[in-house]
Length: 100
Image (cartoon, rainbow, N blue to C red):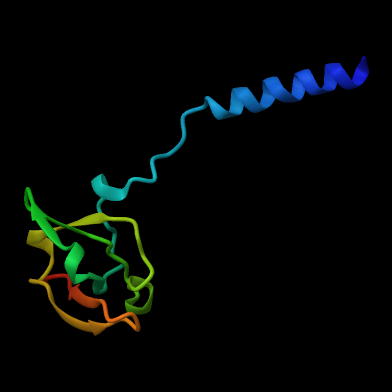
């Protein structure tokens, strides 16, 4: 009987946690926060819309080859995208830099 009660309490706890709101992992509406440096992303993912550049932006060139979450940078705050080399997979990268 104690085991049955324990299992029932555990099941209710898991169900309660699974219904709690979670932070969104969809970065399409997030704005990338650069710590004052360049941002890198896949060239094929780059989209301009509403004064923002959407892409899988990251501050480290090597991380850009594995980043999968899209975010946005404001067009007015960054330079035009420029070539930034290629990943080992052959994927072309672009970079933007903060305007002075």
